[in-house]
Image 1 (tube, rainbow, N blue to C red):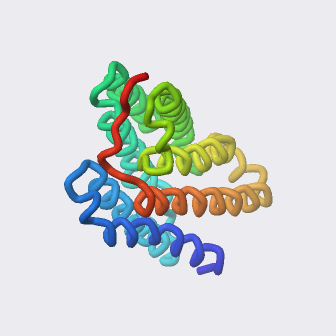
Image 2: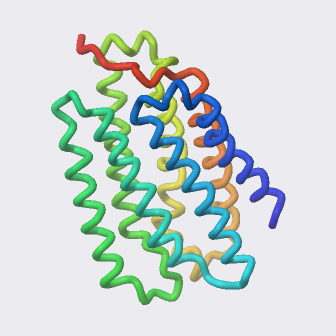
Length: 219
């Protein structure tokens, strides 16, 4: 395992560890499931690394057991965040849209030599970015913008924005890179790891500075 990956796993484990340290603060809110989600992703990535070390391809493992869980949980998290507002149906609609795109990937692209489901990933990425934008617009139009530092979703959305916006081109074109541009694939993979580390650092800040009971008050 490379040094870069070891550093990445440390950053990935950090918000999970801090989340459990602050369990008393988040344990009575839906953010407790965010801690569980981080633990799942960390363990899933370790399992993916073990699969690769055993000289097996782990693309389908991520296609079915990691990436869909990521998008479905994040859509649920936004659903809970928008629970008291007219936008609460948006994550539900986006969930159905993503699952439809995932089904298209399974039916039409599962036999690809490098079977990373880039179509459904790109759709999920775009829908997630729209939810992040909707959150920031809602935050700006509320009194809660004055206490943004204590808003857990603010830090989570900053992390998600950095990673999913920055990695959008990479994962959208990953199969093409794997076929034709292996050197570029390695370079962009390292960039994605850096963006990933920044995202997990923002998640850590959400537990340290955030308050799970922060609510919006419409201005």
